[in-house]
Length: 319
Image (cartoon, rainbow, N blue to C red; front, side, top):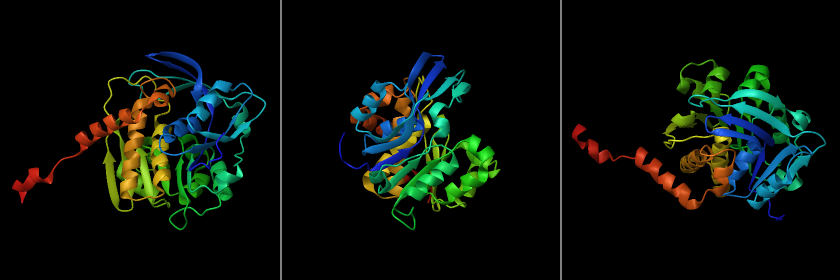
């Protein structure tokens, strides 16, 4: 394993997934937020993951992660079963139907960061329990931005919004970037209008709030600025399971690469995250992002550019 310190630390789940979609079924494929995000990020920086796997976790999955330059020094091994999720997608595949969840060793997961990870200046907290997210923040050596150097993004889910809202709000108050999907943003804030909901999350502390809207792209609020980013149009989406974490990995990978958070880096990172996510949904698990090339990414960046750009010269007749 390389001695190079990770430029991005990713804390989240490591799992095995069983999937049933209109495009087929798969069993025991590599899953989990830490894995999806790290495979996306590795194109841009050296990520290190913090998670836990059981003694049933296939060695080839560790080899695949390490082979892509992911530092697995923070992957803990415990006796028992790896986190296992069984899900099904139907119709427009807008949301998963959970058939079974076995937490296994993940039920007692206590993130343990290697010493080198604690000095990293870019951190992504996957949607684990908010108390664990706070524990990781307390273990880091740098103070989160804007007062310090640490760039922190956090994700969450409806379970924590429903069961531990006060702890979650503590997390939100300490991060640079908060990621939520549209339903979660509304649930957390009680606001029906998405922009109002995003602003209400921003008022809790983070400079930047990113609301993920699935096939409809993302809304980014940073300071007083609003950026609306479309998704890449696709004719086939076989497995949307890891799209959100893949988006986060691309975004945070680019911020780790540049070490800066401003309009340009946020927009660029979000575009890369969007493109990476457009690839991951085209096959089961991480197969598509494992094979993705810079040329593949650039081609879809160009698609987004053509979709989103126009010239103000076209509107001279209005002035």
